[in-house]
Length: 436
Image 1 (cartoon, rainbow, N blue to C red):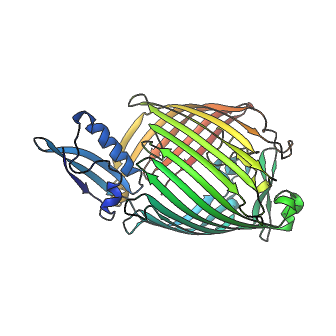
Image 2 (cartoon, rainbow, N blue to C red; image 1 turned 120 degrees about the vertical axis):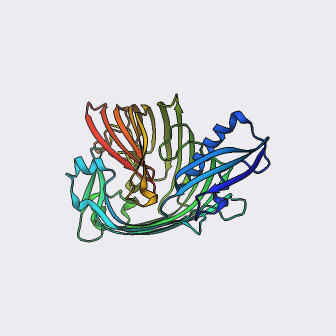
């Protein structure tokens, strides 16, 4: 029987935020053979809150037939006032290879992030940046607004100015124009209601409003940038999303599965300047064969139905995680697309290093290193955009290779890939992801 749950180390985080991730309550019956598995699940769920840099869970015997669950945590930094210095291009590789490492294409500014507001895992984010892209952003996330901790709210507002703008795709590369005046201005707002049931299921209902203005110069270069050569594009956008994710670690999963389903309607009212339906889905599966060997596969894709598709909504493969490794330097426009990815990797290093002169939240540096091999394939269907600008569409693509991943603290992942693709191109590509 579980006699008690003892939380240690959550100096700011409220107990109920942590207890939400624990399926046990006082008085529950325990099966001795399942205690290790229970501790692992509790540790992973609490770590995925992104509030702690270390989490340990263990049972200790307190009587002949009773145990106490101890959860020990070390909180991370919750306030970040950091300079922004980032690449304005789609990814590091495009900037490094195609833009000649042009430092004028960097964004710089300041970002203020206050995590765990009121100890309730709420997040405030303020951004002011200039350089390649000027942006001002406000965001606030409230994970739970009810006592049962099921419903949450997210708010978002951003104003963005572009003096460097990708106005067209040419031979599957983004063509940019640089101008002294603004080429594009964009206002976006978002209101999201989130519902979490159990431990692994989320549902989101989002209402967006977008207002785009574009300079006449862009419309002369690409009349389809907005539909009917319009300077203004404004529309409401409704999005429903279902997510199931029981992965062990969200930032770099080694075990578990993830299912994402999304249905979106762009243009809700007659006066809106866009009319699109989009249906998107991904499925990931990660398996640990033993302590050192791991495999992963993922499949995803989109169906898009439109009453006129402007260039601003042309993106298919090449953006975010919707890409085929080996084609990091290309974008492929279209309506429908699908991709499949698979990895096989081994862990050769896994240790923690204490650096005594650093603050306690940064002192323990975890390091895990994973060599890997991979194979990706995908396809984009396009019947709107010019084939001479988009030759990689309407054909099966594939890429394969080997690489190495480095996972360290604050959910940072560094990836170095060596790839070969259908175009008979060899490539060396770098990727960095982090979650503050």
